[in-house]
Length: 126
Image (tube, rainbow, N blue to C red; front, side, top):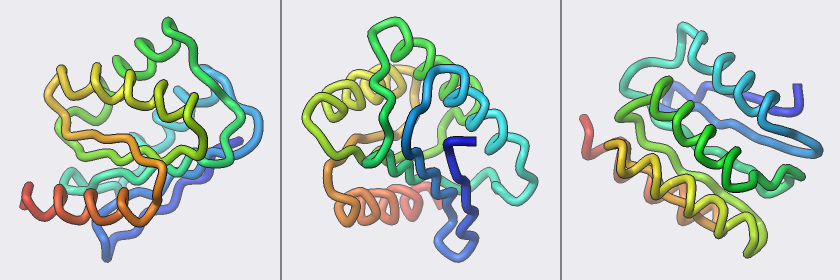
């Protein structure tokens, strides 16, 4: 699978790394895989590192990804990290839709900023 998922129980998060070619189907499959993991506790957030991801969702796919996130992970904090301006714009579109559905999510270009935001947000939900 083009996504790797690691559960970091000590930091109460799943780390999802997307690299290379992905598409809507592989992205939804990764969400399903994470949602099915028994060690992904309800109090955990997600750090999605897509800096090496080759997939750029269009408007239609962005809406589908936002809906899928809301259906599987409602209320969980998620930080999305991307490397370029185009992906940052798309990530902000997706996170805006997800925030409107009630989940704390944000897009970043710096992984350190994303981790700090996620630590704070997970802590606030405790």
